[in-house]
Length: 359
Image (cartoon, rainbow, N blue to C red; front, top):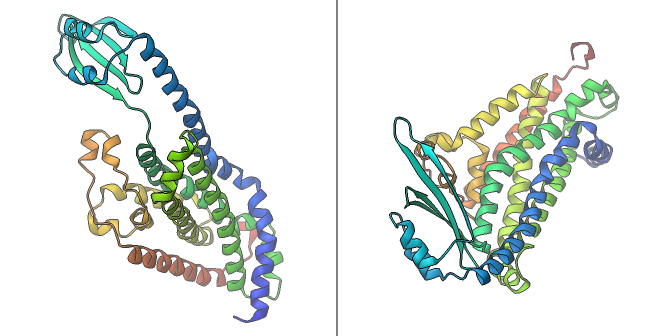
């Protein structure tokens, strides 16, 4: 590649960036990318208010943590009220089990000023105890890791790359403007490189900005010294890892859907197939897990998210374990896969025909 072709690549990037950032076809990508930010902001507003509310309730209905811990499954209603006093909130009702007699059920809520504890009674006996503990940075960082791995990578970035990269050539064909590029004295591989890099730059800017804002919104609810200590420990390293993983996801999925946009008239079909494969990765045997982008992205994540904790027990049993790839192997596989997909796209773009009548 000579200097003239490099200049042509930069010219394509400059022309394409504006269309990529402000195209009506990718407006929904911004919604998908930044929706989690507002969820974290809402939680950071709600959590401190909830803690203040529980502290105020504890003043009116004082209960010790030790007394709450003494209550377990099988405790009687009379024992609970003798030990804890009256709850700050209670509900009761009756239901009839299928083919049985009516049962009395009730729920009593207590707090020690930190945790919100709900006791569920059936016929005056505790059947379930639910503890809603205050949010801590380790707890919230685990929630962040879970949302990042099972929503942001698998859905937001995935579909965002479909919207951005699949339209790099397909969008030009639909607008009947691709011939303006093809009539220039530019090799098609150079055009492909410029379009891919413009899409990659746009995707990385959009999704890394969202990742950073999510991180800020997540930390917003905690006091300054707690945040400073967290960042001084593992916080900055985790943030940089998430930003790097986001960029790698944009590069990998972007290369896939760049090729799909050249190979298929309707990129929805290949997107559905790839989505099905990536989503099924949790349940695939260890050997097949490694034939996916998401496996190597998750291997790079600084915090391990446990999907089985939020899944029904029967579904969680289907999850197969696989040893995560090392950092070097994961990076090598992602970069190699991306380059192979771009090379394949370069072969396809040579055969590209400017025939608008078929689109």
